[in-house]
Length: 243
Image (tube, rainbow, N blue to C red):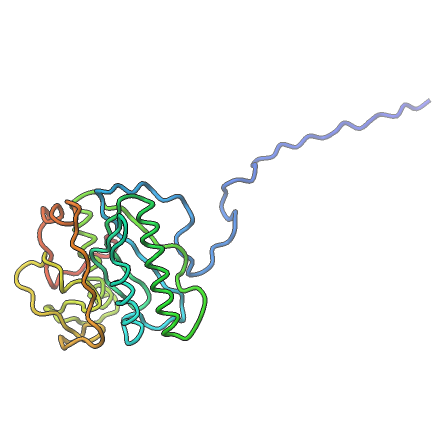
């Protein structure tokens, strides 16, 4: 009589539990902002370089009514509890800020308030509704005098840098009227009166409202410490990849 044999059960060894691996997770959309990772600590003694980028389709932030809306929002949101904007520059589709904050919570609340003010003003100008910013803002704490000097040059001279990358020419004496360059007291040598058409190609009077006045720095790094590495030349161009 034939005996029936029960087939042995095969075992499989899985090589991966499916965690972090190339291509895993939700695909990143073009133009998406910084990934939603936990931000690092925010020491009160360290100023922060913040970048806020607009979605495509919005008007040029440096021109006309859009610039007026940005200038008004910066003036209104420049200072809050434990938060102050000390320097800024506005480019066609993004803003660079140097801010001081008492901690991570103060930075988050200050930037949320500013982003809302900016969005309302820009939506009103553009006659639209909905999102304005491409994801979260990017923030980097600056902990050394050298880092702060690099960031100051990068922010204040950002329009000059963009013009150079695009093959344009900028007058050596020009200071960007869409930034806080006019109120900056760390220029090397005597700087001329601010001016310049939008884009900075000719040193003529800027159109539209003047840049808003901002609070003076209170951290040692942003007020004094950075000067250890030398004042900033009016015609100095930030190196690619700095700040």
